[in-house]
Image (cartoon, rainbow, N blue to C red):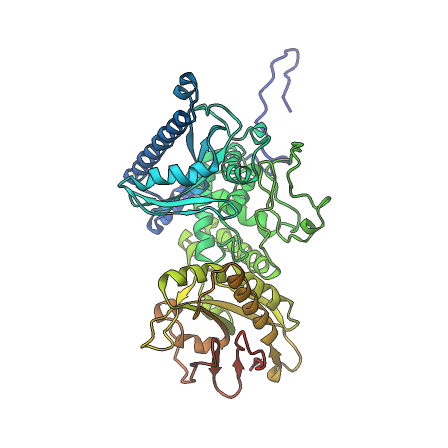
Amino acid sequence: IPVTTQGSQQTQPPQKHYGITSPISLAAPKETDCILTQKLIETLKPFGVFEEEEELQRRILILGKLNNLVKEWIREISESKNLPQSVIENVGGKIFTFGSYRLGVHTKGADIDALCVAPRHVDRSDFFTSFYDKLKLQEEVKDLRAVEEAFVPVIKLCFDGIEIDILFARLALQTIPEDLDLRDDSLLKNLDIRCIRSLNGCRVTDEILHLVPNIDNFRLTLRAIKLWAKRHNIYSNILGFLGGVSWAMLVARTCQLYPNAIASTLVHKFFLVFSKWEWPNPVLLKQPEECNLNLPVWDPRVNPSDRYHLMPIITPAYPQQNSTYNVSVSTRMVMVEEFKQGLAITDEILLSKAEWSKLFEAPNFFQKYKHYIVLLASAPTEKQRLEWVGLVESKIRILVGSLEKNEFITLAHVNPQSFPAPKENPDKEEFRTMWVIGLVFKKTENSENLSVDLTYDIQSFTDTVYRQAINSKMFEVDMKIAAMHVKRKQLHQLLPNHVLQKKKKHSTEGVKLTALNDSSLDLSMDSDNSMSVPSPTSATKTSHLRLA
């Protein structure tokens, strides 16, 4: 509220208000906050989260070259379609960036998300043919591949050592002006849905940057939070944790609530706000506006399915979406627990009882749980392994979902990191990847000899993966997937020592991996723990695990 002094009409300009509620505190940083922020920067440096100036200039140069290629290509297309010379001279075309690079929080060697924006006479088919061919001719371009059928179609390439993903949007404009602001909702009118999806990344990123009070403070805080999330194994949209844009929105909301705070305070407040957040109340950076373009937007009042989202974080650009629809009961439980621990550690740091390094210590996932499920995917060639791993990974949350529903399981925590698996047969060419899921069982009266049957959960998961692979014509003979239950003390037989970190005295129990009839694994272990996993064809065997 402007302050009016008695008798004069002079008003003090009110501080710009960010977000959908008023700030929690307008306090300015103190000397100690500045010192702590400097210490935070020093702690982050060895983790490679800041890029050298030289590397940054190289990216700018590469994007400049790409931008010129786009302009050149659009001029050529315009000429081939006989547009008037006056139009061709000003036809434009432009590369926009989004994601971590656009937010200014990319790490060393990270890829760049880019969007090619073209005028109305340039088609999507032109992008995947003549522009693709133009890229192919550039000597700096390697690993060029087009994924035209994807939900958001993309050209992927490596330009002078930097990985770049390029999306395409054709706007209903005759020319693309240099100062085009993609946040303008009217640009979406009459666009193809793939163009709307492709524009979304840029629109969300630009909107986030316009909705924070201080971009530098936002960036430094986000770098710290992203590193913390990666170190704590909770950075993965596909596995049901949060991806980059979701972490960015949580940090942006924190910045709105403490508009004058600097990074050391903001990191602490981030943990304070989100350890106490009453989910499923949504996190919003601005009041959603209706655009009358009839695109589906996140709205639990209208869409019953939106009511089941557990941790809604809503993108600020129309059409508003929930960026965390993959979050499950388990992943939310794991994240909220991590927020609480982050709060406890940053409390200590602010009281000088701990250093920043404590916040970025990687907890030992393999010591955390007593029981694990190890998921193995294997394929006969490296190329097939990459495809197969992509499909299996995108389905792991189905397995987590069915494990959560099991009456004896409280929590299933999948580690976002995958590992190369030991070869089953040293003589056979085979590429294997494994994921590890930590399990917490419900405390029951006689848990000593409780027998839990996971056959159905695992079988329905493997069936789903095989079915999808066959339907999408991706399946090849010898692509296999198998799951097994392993106790903590047996993990050392599957994982390399450096992964397990804390070396414990190894037990001598045997874990034999032997192939059953076609594509399944039998895990023969000590007598109190039997589990065999059925193959996709024979669902006769059951897998019981006893909790000793």
